[in-house]
Image (cartoon, rainbow, N blue to C red; front, side, top):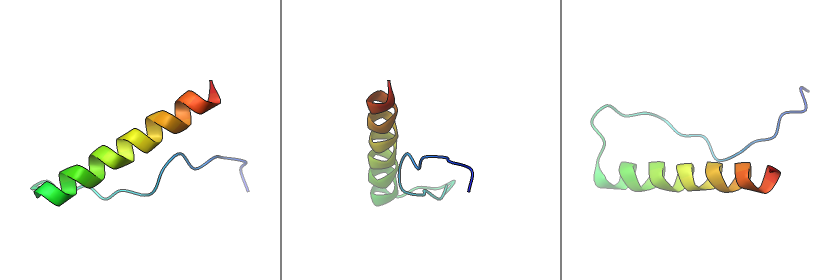
Length: 40
């Protein structure tokens, strides 16, 4: 193990995203930012 901390759930990139895909990406980004802020 590397001791890394998982910041958010995994995300797959779609070059032609649908509305649901955009919402999932926004949720992923929010989780990532919140995790980063909690570590500061």
